[in-house]
Image (cartoon, rainbow, N blue to C red):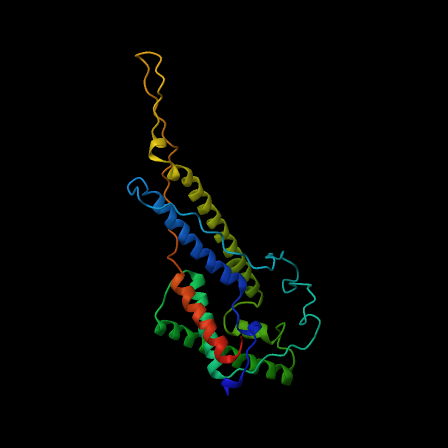
Length: 270
């Protein structure tokens, strides 16, 4: 029964770079809102100036993009248990716990794509679609492996490569390309976006924090009647519009957190 299954965090935790990117999107939205509020300070004198929130903490593991190699399927020389041929024990998951983890994965992907909230029924439909895809994929993989055992090599590098082509997914190497571009590069782009917004907001803080009597200062020492009082205004922004960012992911984070806790408590991951 699923109630007796213990799923370790290594098999149920979402990918750290994906989660970090979601936090960056949330942070960018918050800073963008602070910039908008800073622009209304002159109209709302009573508005409180808020410090810029700190950047989310990056994953401890160093992010690196692998250089293109030949052959293209030669990806890493790290001495992982898999590369060393050591056995990897995977838990046997029942339908219920598998559906829970898949549901959380779908919600994470939606948040990573920029959606801040979704109806439960919509997430359930997407989860059902993903489940149907994996069922078809694994059935073809089972059939491909059995066919190679009976008739030998089919002309593909391995059974997995054959199934990728049968499912019209291209080559297995596209997974590597997808991860490099849609995960690592996407994360880097949001890091730069956040840094730019933080710098823009911090540039506004000196002018926002000045007292009213400091905004307009008159030169008090007049040498003659022709002297004209000097009026000093703080440097104004260049008026460029801030790019519209994706909406806040706070509801999505709360949803993902509750799902993760629910799965962890229910199936003994914590």
